[in-house]
Image 1 (cartoon, one colour):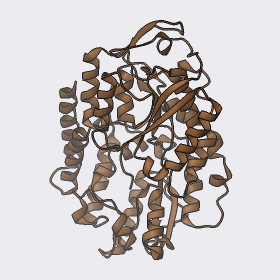
Image 2 (image 1 turned 90 degrees about the horizontal axis):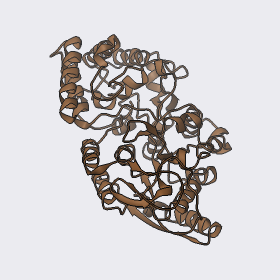
Image 3 (image 1 turned 180 degrees about the horizontal axis):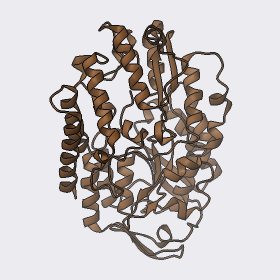
Image 4 (image 1 turned 180 degrees about the vertical axis):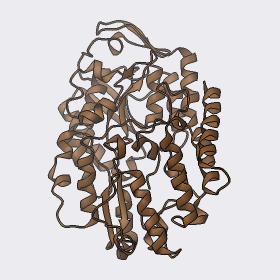
Length: 457
């Protein structure tokens, strides 16, 4: 099961508000003088087409998201090392709780011209800030900025500016991974070979069906709620969920969507999934740890959860590659580092952002035993810590597998508002209950999604 990337409706609303407030950039080059970013007066060198120049000096603010409690020593060390290398610069670290009002609060800071100089962003917030011109175009302001990062990751870590063009307004920072976790004993009972994970989503569904027939209700293959799989499965199958401009739903145009819904309905009817999990938001953690579900979460952190909470099941746990299907690789949803175009000391802010995300610091943090995260630089992923997995324990194998897949991953993921996602999910649930045919459910899902997308503009 793969947790889909849930997006906030507030992001789209905020983006419209920012546009109305006067988005975009004016001015250009690195000459002295004033220009504007959003509705804020900024140094002309922060915007336009010129490379950012200037001394690394002055005081900047660095904002993370809920990291200070557990990683204070690490980030204070990074700040100290940066300040030692740049004695004329100083960094004030603040930590945002990262709650569900993060995007709206951050956008409010941007509109008030008080955005932190360097900040940890999710995709939704980066989308809004980029459209309004509140982030430096890093690829322009430092033409060498891409060098440390996995090329596919860097190329896809872009957001649309006010003109609709893709801009590199963020550095990809840390990310999770996607893999199959499974109870090898339960798979073998069903005649599924744990050493040969399926290469397609429908191949995985076929394995689910084998488990349902062998289990006879004593255990299950996976959880039922399709919210975990939409649009993640569609992305992996290279089914286009939305049109290129994101303004209309197009998933019903692909015949495989109906086939996917038919499979889900069949699996639910045949007992591959607990009946009471159709509308439950619970992930498989508890049932997997009890040996009642064959497949666990696709998040690598889940392997550590099982190790700590159910050693007997961990001993039976295997990890394998999430089916690449027609996409040919996996996608990831990294955390990002952005630099405010409203920064009064932009050269120092850019220098610190690059220092924070360089290979040395990414590798050091990702080795911290308190986290299960992965770096986005090529050098970091090639580090022996990730590549030279010793032993056959699931966690070591998961680390090596994810590090390898991240070399070709992208950050392209379909972004759906909760309203649109729920509209699609509810129709699939009706098909799974036998209340609609797969064909009708897909048609109705697309119609309802289009109504919501039209309302959002």
